[in-house]
Length: 151
Image (cartoon, rainbow, N blue to C red):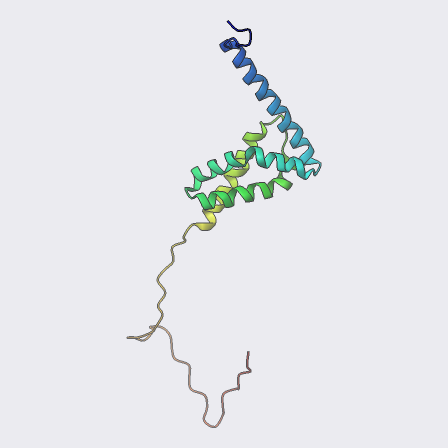
């Protein structure tokens, strides 16, 4: 047997490695959030790269349109530049807070694109007179109507 062959990892060591990676990832996100609050654009870029795919996927599950989901994702990260100042770490993890911002933007998008029912508008007045309205009296003879100025 060769000494170069590696032993299979025990399930406990793999779990620990995942936990450590997750903790390191959380630390990076916390540091990026703190730097983004100070106006660091590279920190905002890091947050975009880290969360954009998740945000887009969740937006698509809400609006059911991949193009609208991409637009919503862009709006979320554009709003993030100012909204991140209101984020308080002890209240909720950043990812949860970001999903809340996304949900609000997605609902605004749905409200804005919702069709509003309206009554049918007639385009002509054929076939009848309006009841309750009188026609305007004709202008007196000899007086020309005022000239309209060109627009």
